[in-house]
Image (cartoon, rainbow, N blue to C red; front, side, top):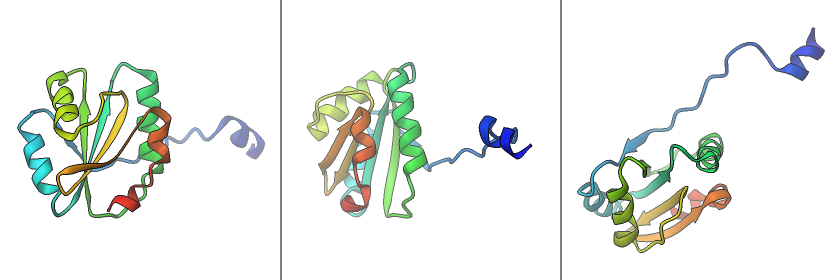
Length: 127
């Protein structure tokens, strides 16, 4: 029985890791993110809910995330909130990509990545 369990996996459901995401739904929130970044690193994950690559990048980010750090995580569904997504690019001086991770500290972008490169960012270096 152990061989089948190893090959086919357990029938027990896996508990999914849940991160403390804050929904980013309004342009006005960006001013607050900029302000909060003076004392705490802010991270924005721009996600396209219909894109398989974006879904994969999100899963990889969530599964690899293991920080107990002084930072806030913001989740942006860029299809539902296109205006907010556009403003992130203008305000924080990044070219729009999806998926995209933007790291803000002291009011400016200190790091960003898109697609597979999101998993290569070491968030600890920005805290």
